Length: 243
Picture 1 (cartoon, rainbow, N blue to C red):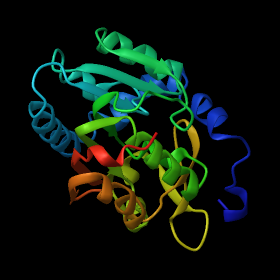
Picture 2: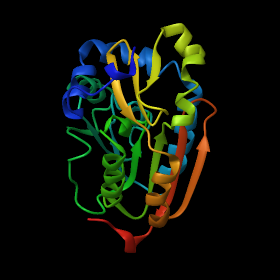
Picture 3: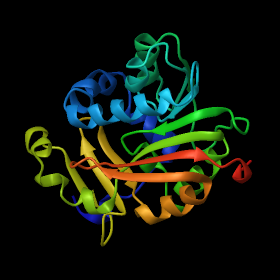
Picture 4: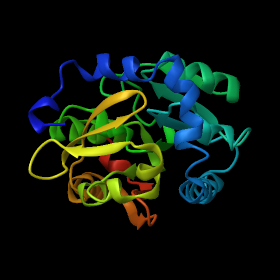
């Protein structure tokens, strides 16, 4: 596909619900849940450790939560709030984890009170759907304000240097799905799968760390050996709450 053709023709708020409709929601578990056991095993290991730090009933929000798979693995461990733009994905999330609260909304615009949560997560690079690097930086700065002092953040970053190798992966070979750069590098890119064309943006790791670093006592970065960079920030500093 020529690069000139890979341009956004609609807004993020329009594209995501159109992509993540009932048919794709039905396909999604086989494509992105059961197909990636090592990644999800690491997710569960990290989440188990984070939740254990907070004692009973911590407050956990997952933005761009999709079908809420991570919530479904921790029944009774937290007060869970999931935020996503797709009603089809949320219908499956509610069925899998009926004790969680799910909100259909835009992560770039939805507001919560400062210090509302002990843990904030974002998996599968869901932030990449935002229009540009400035919008993503604004998201990270805003959601920091939702995390209570002492709280934690766990996000999976999709970085340009990993996207370039995706088309050589066994998953791409099996499915025929492909990643295409929308410029001279993969910071702006598109991904085509059975839902259609996903228009995405991947800022460098340094931009996220510049925001997270000053706000937490510690920030750990771990690559999962596939395509995800896992960033775990702990010990939210109480004097840096961003309203």
